[in-house]
Amino acid sequence: MSPRKKVRILRSMRSTHVFTLAGVPVGFQTGYLFLLFYFSYQFFAIGPLYAGIAAAIITVSLLVHEFGHAMMCKRYGLNPQVILVTMGGLCAHDRAKSNKHDALIVAAGPLVQIAFGVACWAAYEALGPATPTAAGKPSIEHFALQLLYWINIYWGLLNLLIPLWPLDGGQLYRLLLLRYLSPAKAEKITHWTGAIIGVGGGIAGALLYQSLFIAFIGVILGFENIRRINSKAASGAIRTRNKTVDSLLTSAGEAITEGDFREAARAAFQAKSEQGVGEDQLGAIWSILAISHTKMGEHDDAVDYAKRAPASPAVFASQIESLVALGRQSDAQALLRGGDAPKLPAKAREKLEALAGLDA
Image 1 (cartoon, helix red, strand yellow):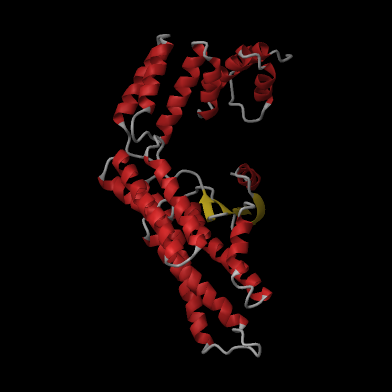
Image 2 (cartoon, one colour):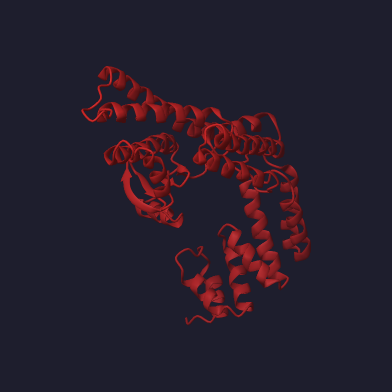
């Protein structure tokens, strides 16, 4: 993937590209400025310089963590991109080939961060006892190194050890459960655990530590896990295939071949209702629904399903046909002219262009 394409991905996530380091583009969302302000504000009492240093330290610490993930991603050729967001940071990347690779990528972030924190602690100890300045403030060196080792060691350990999805510990917890349980059970237990820890931790942060930030983060993550409990979509890669879904998709494909589009749609809907549907299976479901609904004349639904389906010539053709049937020729023409259209045989493309009213 070219650097220019990576930057476009950053922009698609509503983030601003800032720089590229070791082939990894780095960007931030405007919500990250809220985190910077909240974290640095508590140090304004010492002085504006210390607040600015604190803002720089949290940024460096997050980048160290995310680049731990990113460097492991690069080892597997997964095209990582680092983005600083309101809740901290994330490393977006292509899908890994195995749960083992996922686990190594997830664990690399906090482990690199903890190692960095230990190095900062050693440097702090090497400085010797802290000597306050004439104004009674800590020296810049001691302040910076102490904050660096505190953030990176303690935050790294919490991130790694607490089984709260989507933190790294929660993702590792989910991968561990997938080794011994069905995908449906692993997902349920992961998110029930995350809901209890998130909401409980948020309440504890408010009552015991009087920290609105801990309360906010805990409750937000807790409710995100609650939302996920009854979701049909998996919260990560599911590599243990649901054989019932495969069987239903085979039946749906046969029904399309035979021209029984209503039966194809029925089988696809039944497959979608199963627990533990894999990403590729879900893509096939959306594709079948887009094609079958186009053929049944249910064009509004077909256009909606086509947007969710992976790009393929059959889905693209169904999308164009449905848009034209809905009187949306201009939208159909824009798709045909767009650079994201899948490659089609010349005759098939000419047919679609004629249907959309494009000049030869």
